[in-house]
Image 1 (cartoon, rainbow, N blue to C red):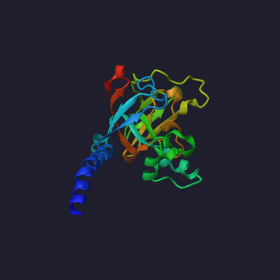
Image 2 (cartoon, rainbow, N blue to C red; image 1 turned 30 degrees about the vertical axis):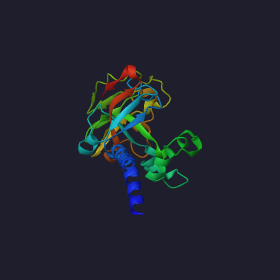
Image 3 (cartoon, rainbow, N blue to C red; image 1 turned 90 degrees about the vertical axis):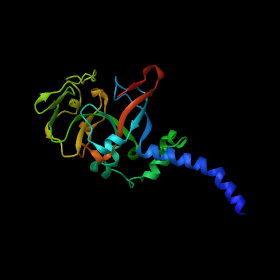
Image 4 (cartoon, rainbow, N blue to C red; image 1 turned 180 degrees about the vertical axis):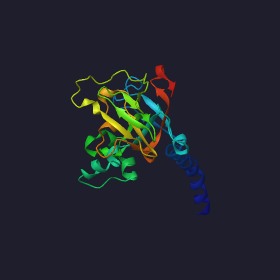
Length: 217
């Protein structure tokens, strides 16, 4: 019996250790992400694959211009949560729902389990405005955003989510999509326009797909 247990241990220990190591890396170091929408065009294309690194966001605040992945606003925005007809899913449920083939079945999807990717445009303590074209004004000065090529038209039906002179709270950020005319971001969150640092999963580090567009961020 002892010999049998020893054989089982030697046979299963390496793959179990490998599974644990991969899981730990995914949880604490880095993980792959898929771009499902055009909210970050032209910098990020639909179906791009990225590596998101998680260490730097734990040790320091992101900088303006960083591209970050964060938890769904449907999991932290109080007004969106109040609209739910059932309790928020826990992390285990969200992880299970993210696995194929379950992730491919829309009926099982919960918006609170999604992750979003946007760009940091305003930092804690800054006074920020967004005008009707989607341009960002920090402390009464419009910032340069060379990554934006699709601003809203001046007759946009929702005024491009414009707002004026809000102070970004401590440990919070304003995050917007580069595709200002087609991005559901902080401008439209009903509870608060700002993202708390604790909701950030990681920062875009490396695009590994498609192969002809490999790049570091």
